[in-house]
Length: 275
Ligand code: HEM
Figure (cartoon, rainbow, N blue to C red):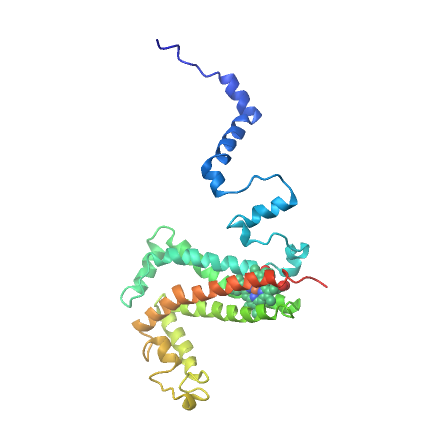
């Protein structure tokens, strides 16, 4: 025989909510479930050794050092410029992937895709401007970071290797900016890249008008400029080459160099400090 339906006791439920019992019951059932315990090996007693274990046994947390010097957190010393440069890089990557959904690097479409993206796609203008401003900021902050490293003498041994990695990073940051400039495929882009790539004619060894060109044997048909453009003029082949360089090759190389840069900071004993 069916019993009387159980009427929940509202006063008891309210007491459980007020005392936090419901929240602690829910969090206990989540953190003790098999899904949770197989994903996160946390929850040890709070001792200094276990705190270290928590960091090193988590794939995301282990990207951070377990211990850092107190001065490494002082904005006055680092200006946080390296960190902000990295943040700007991440913003350009995320917004850049969104832009890639709408943009085709083809002579007939590129300009109109940009206009469509800017005026018709929801949040398109926001994405385009975030990409643009994050890219501009990255160029500014990378120089400020380099200036800080120079002023604090942080390029000195044992950090000279990381300074050299940094020189490559600043070069790749500028190359990212330069290759992105052609993609809107408007008059400004065409002529800016015409001027920029004309400078490649004068590259030592690799440009046909540069020093030692005759030594290597490069000609106007096959030198740094024509390889970059895929021809002798800024045309559709140049657009495709700049697109591949901008969206794939240079970000991959820059990302790999950043990984080495960050790893090396740790191996050099963390961020340098005031004497
Ligand atoms: C995409 C470009 C770059 C990124 C994302 C980046 C990122 C960082 C970060 C996060 C740090 C930790 C300290 C801080 O934030 O100041 C750092 C340190 C350092 N960076 Fe960079 N960096 C870049 C470019 C450069 C450049 C252009 C140079 C120099 C040519 C450089 C040389 C160094 C050196 C020597 C250190 C160690 C500084 C110290 O121990 O005080 N980096 N970098």
